[in-house]
Length: 256
Ligand SMILES: [Zn+2]
Image (cartoon, rainbow, N blue to C red; front, side, top):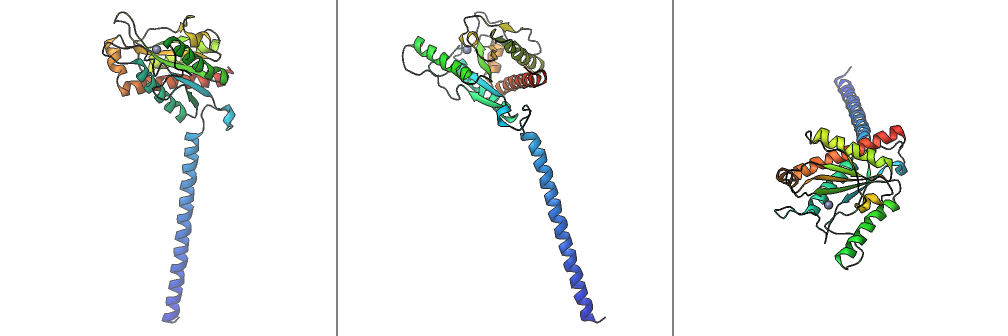
């Protein structure tokens, strides 16, 4: 074999070797991409729907209490309920959306839902009716309203949940949220779930499973200090969304 022939064969081998390396590289990239897509699919797929159809994805209406002209309860230091309600509600939406749950917000800014500018009483009535309309327009939804409490004395503290007596599922929804808040965030909270009185318009007229989560007391100094922090608002939001998801999981298993 001449030197030239040897050189030619060496070049040919090197060429084949390079092709082989490139094929291996392409296969490796494809394998990694496939694994990545599968993993992402597991994260992004709605965890609560029984199929991939969008129609089966649960809808949760998150109602940030008050807003706009209606500030809600006000703490001694001037802290307004409406802003903390909105912050918690937005984080609940973020957590639920991440889990593949469809969320409708009654408001996502500092506004009320009244149709016309009139007397406060008329504006409040219109605001409430428009929040209720979201329930009647979405008969398969859940309704979770976020509020803060205020009491005449400062010793009352902790979250409390009220449920609508219109549908038995409201109590189950409320109990799931209460369990998540107590087990994850407020271990000392002994407050039990309460049936809402007839004075709570949205729960009295609820057409879907509905609860109000009173996240804490503006009249209690330690509650107030915590409620004013974004960190605690986010923790509350996580617990509320955890309770909603647990309720939805139970519903899927038990058919309610
Ligand atoms: Zn309120």
